[in-house]
Image (cartoon, rainbow, N blue to C red; front, side, top):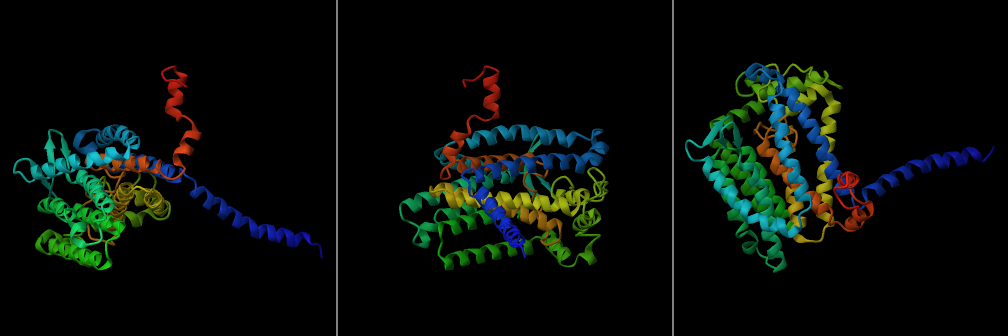
Length: 418
């Protein structure tokens, strides 16, 4: 027998190992995190703009006479947010630390204004918005960014001074500051944002290396606080009972969740096609915001939902990779806090749509309609891009890459030096 078949078999066995090694090599490059954050952001924004149009066109055509009303508003918010993303991606670390306290102060003031009768607007049982003519601002969204920056700066200073070995300097003033934000959001009956703020707080403690007993104790207090919030508010208890027993309450307290499941189930493997879904025809409330993932599942099917999950998974991997590879304590803490914010918010939103979690009313990052949530998220992603440039070898790789397409276009037009 010739030795050739054996050699071919050996080569065939080696080929998958080489492909795996090549894939691992791509993930190990200096700019991997940068391109993952940038690519996932662009794709999720494009998907969000498309799905906002698809989910809202029927309702907007009925109410305003134009199917493109919310699409135009979302595009306007995106046009405002993307330059801020670009600016944030070029800021030094010290600029983010300098912005931490002003953003925190502005968030506290805005959250207080929400509670002023006549200024705050209530919908769905929660007082979250301040109305400025046709526009609405939700101060709890920039509060998430404020807690990430302020908490990371505070803990980084304490780490430099060696003050993280005991519980008192570790928690003071981090716990009172985070508690103030949580209290103001709780007074507006916004449970979803409360959960995200508490997640950011716990993520900062985890990354900074809080003692195990302290971390478990704080996590227990957080769970107790959330339980109290659910018990004391009747509509939250109704949502919880509807979640635990959807069949008996689908026409009352769990109507939205049931319609969301119907939408996803009707999508099948490949979906009904873009724009062909039926749930948005007055069956599924808030289809363009809290339940936009259900429209994705209906019109793009299981494949579309897996793509969305994959994009958020890659975004989370990139954020944690940045936090692991950078050396500056503030950068590590801020990257981990921002990643926890985006990942947990996506998990809670998607989990509510597919019936795994009770409905909390928080949007899907980058996909749901709403400028108050979109702009702070884009700034946080710009911050992650700035941090990704500080990974080992990233600056050299960027310098070797040369000018980007914008600078090349300006140079070609004679508006910038080559």
